[in-house]
Image 1 (cartoon, rainbow, N blue to C red):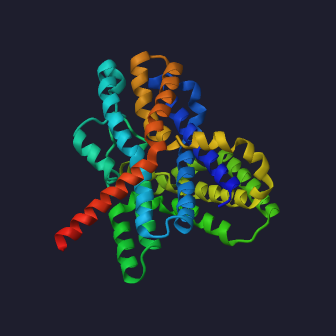
Image 2: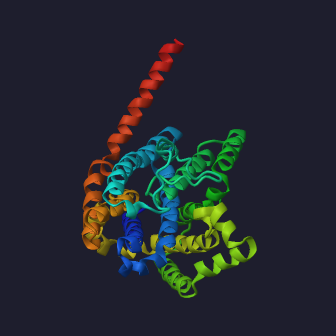
Image 3: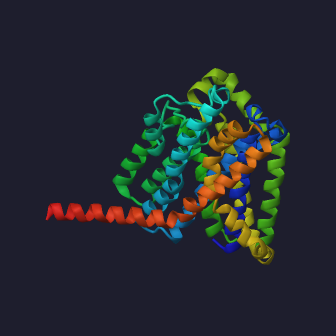
Length: 362
């Protein structure tokens, strides 16, 4: 992957997180109705994350994580550098916020029963398997991280094993993740396919530019035709709206997600091919983009509970948003931006376990 493409993906990652942030800031209980237009793209922002994740994982498995152990180290440090702090922060600010303003937390968005089970299910990424939809307190966005963790597992089974072992492990992963997570797996895989196309298809910048512009046109058409609503209405006419919400939860818009995921994949392929023409202008903004992108995961996983807490504290929408962003950057500085330390700690812990087993066996 060349530097312009990497920079572009970082920009897309941060931009998608910003859309999700403003979407949740628009909720009436936070008095942010002025930001409602962002909700038109909330699902699509998450779908963009999935496609981008598949694209990047396909790249690192070829260029960096060439064996299963290094893949495990990279993925686990990426997840737990933020997930652990997100669960702790969510539990803390939800407890404080619900005492400051009980009415604000009196709704479906705050699931506080069985706290230890909710924390455990979230930390082990089983909170969305099969019929479960275990919300970690107010942290609604966490669902997509659990989906992504299972896609990491699925990819590892396919990419790092062979023969009968690959079949058994891949089948086991698909069975364990269940139908909800499985329904959005094609979206994630479009990212894998997009990367493979960029690496193996010898198209020139002109072709790439045409694809990139075509993807923007398709995205505009998708929005103008209200494809998400049309797809949901089609599915609801077959299965029933209640069934979609009760059984599929966050995967209920899977049909629209497939379509938009394909558009995003075309966008990534197009940009990768046209990127040689854009190398110089992107160099000028590469630093700020990479800096902001290094907080994306923290922004995504921390903003929702922090928005509620700071609104309970101040009851001022704009101040709530500013305090939330400031807190995200403060926490992210010591978590997401220190994931190399988490990677080292996990490596050392695994080494000690291996050493202990070798000693016991010897």
